[in-house]
Length: 208
Image: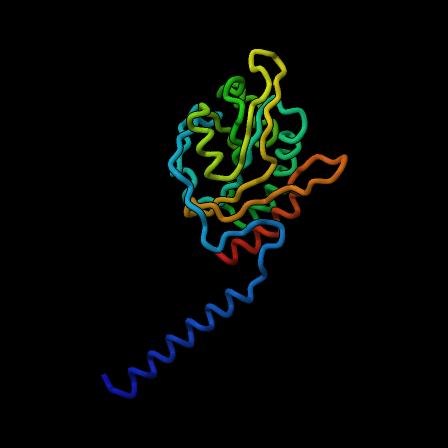
């Protein structure tokens, strides 16, 4: 190859790379979430969904996945979060059609597959409810940073489960892209706002 042409090609490649990096850094950054420029790995897991089917890491691939912890007997945060996600679901799908929503139950004692199958479609037929024993649930929760604990006597009928109100976004490579944490305001439920999810989602998809 001509000795003059080779340096020219190298210079063009370097310039293109520089333009790409400049454009990426100039894109609007997420404002309402903890965004990972280097997405975090999701370790292997296996749940059962509300339809009785196995749900593993493979179901995360090629999807933008919203994950939060909840349970069907939750009196406030869980149904409100599901409603909020349902309100913005069509808008989220307009940003990326390969969007899915998962509620992972932190109450496997009561949240059987049959119970979830009645609860989840009430909010949206396309949402998934997942259940598994604490041996699966606890390491999964630590991996995602969504903690939970059962303090009450589970032999009582109306026991409560403490759990995170955050929502995790997993990218189509099956890795954690961002965590949305709710604002804690006196007298208000700690719910992640749908508008915040939508605003940052548009930016994260462009950065992906």
